Image (tube, rainbow, N blue to C red; front, side, top):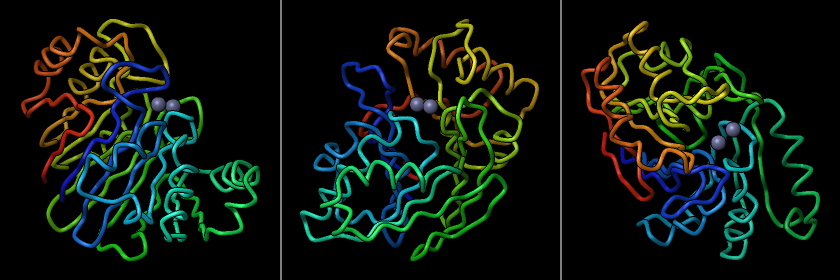
Length: 251
Ligand SMILES: [Zn+2]
Ligand SMILES: [Zn+2]
């Protein structure tokens, strides 16, 4: 499988990073995970068209993870693609009906299925040959971390979270853990991760994980990237990767 980071930033704009979004090319078709502002406009810079996307997983409903979902629906509709299946945490259905309700002319044209999922749920999105498992992240709103298992590999995406034992358990023996790393080492913060808090978790809870890729960087992280890698290297033998917009990883 091929993982393309469409967006590696957060709610505050910064040069070179749009908000959160990861495009996973499985054998059958692409799976989009999160769809923050700026993600839709990254499609022309990939070799996958937005019209190929009919399945989206949402980690949570914060704007930096969902803001481009309606624009994606509209862009697809304008190009003749009207079906979409959205998997998300508790509240996704109500949220979508409210925001889509403000655009009746789009709502009438698109066929959107929302499937709310709960921590511990295992499922296979329709039309895919992969298994997805989720667990609760530690964030200010209901948030899910996902493990995607396909024939050629498996990875975990943490969503927004503090370092969590449940997510570490989910990532045990995965090829790749894509983990948020919002703020620089030493920042005192809840609901998010810093290299310091992630290193503490890795030290306490060292699981067999192939590599770790850090993403979801606040502008404050700029200039602290190498330091972040150095912090984690002390507690983790695998490769530590810093995500960039349009970076690709192969599993
Ligand atoms: Zn969030
Ligand atoms: Zn976020």
